[in-house]
Each structure stands twice: as C-alpha cells, then as structure tokens.
Image (cartoon, rainbow, N blue to C red; front, top):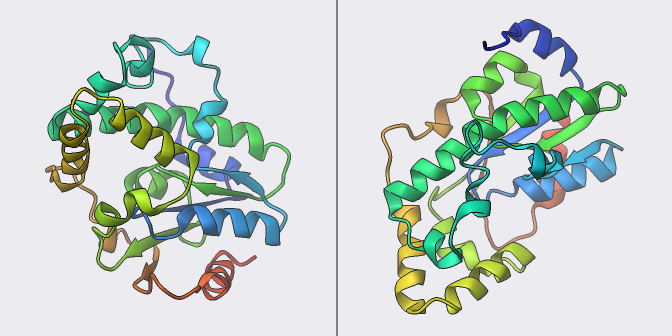
Length: 222
C-alpha cells in the first residue's frame, strides 16, 4: 500500500528549505551556490538525490533512475528519439520527487536553512512549500539553452560530448541529441505562470550575479 503523508506536515518540516527551479541556463546553480556561501545555508545541488544509495533503488519501482545500470551503452541512450528521451526524463523526475523530499526532511532536522537547486515541479512545490520559499528563474528567450548547452565548461557537458564523439556516427548522434530540446510535449510546464516569485534573465553577456543574489535574498527574507 502507498503510505500517505499530508502535505501540511511536509510543509511544516520543510519550513527552512528554499527552492529554486525554472529554465536551464537561467543561473539556478550559480545562485544556489552563492546563496549557500553568503548566508551559511546547506547547499543541495541539482542532483542531490544521488545521495540515496544506488544499490537500494528498485528496477521495478525506480526504472528511470536504474536505466543507466541496464542500458547496453551510452550510444543506446544517445539514440533515443525525442519522445523516448522526454518520457525517460519525465519518469526520472517523478521518481526523484520522493527521494528529494525525503532527503530534505532528513537534512532539515538539524534546523539549518537549506537552499535547493530543484527539479521538483511547481505543482508539487505548491503543496509542500510557501510562496516566500520558492523562486522561479527564467530565460528570455526560454530556449537559449539549445544553443548554449555545450558552452558551459563543466564535467557533465565534457563527458556527454566525449560519449557523442565515441558513437559510430558522431554527427548523427549530436544532431539527435540537439533534437531533444526541440521536442514539445503536452505536459510541458507553464513556467511563466506558476504563481511563484519569478526572475527572468535576459542579459547573457554582463555579470549580474550580485544583483540577482540581492533580489533572491530579499525574496527569501535572508
């Protein structure tokens, strides 16, 4: 049986947790890191659900998170059609919600403020958090990540490009990879109308980190 836990109870225990969600390339990870350092908060990066031991995942209950343990290789993953990739990422996101909430409940027991680069969707955040504890960061244009994805110098991007280069047809693999960002699903989130506090990034040339940090800190009441 499913074990029901009332949302008001979760909201109470997560009262010291602050969430940032929104578009890719909007600066979420940068702001979470800066806020954690400036205000002595616990930092939960985008993949903080990885804290859960992989050996305790179930291939039947968490098939999306277990996919990398069962695939034949990275070329199989890179060969997913846009719909297949969307379905997989959607399932992973749903599986992560439970793990991330439980991880945050564990971390919040110490009473320290927590800042989270989260993938928990707005409809769930509305149930487990409050307006002043959530910020949505957007890009204008919203699809800028399609052209900027590999501009970031981080290990994940480098690893992915290395896997693409190792495919039998690297050009086709890269083309297919880029096509994932163009796929439009009927369950897309309307980020501009979530009802939460929103900050839109439109300047991708200037360093506006301190300005954005101040805006978010004021919203969160830090």
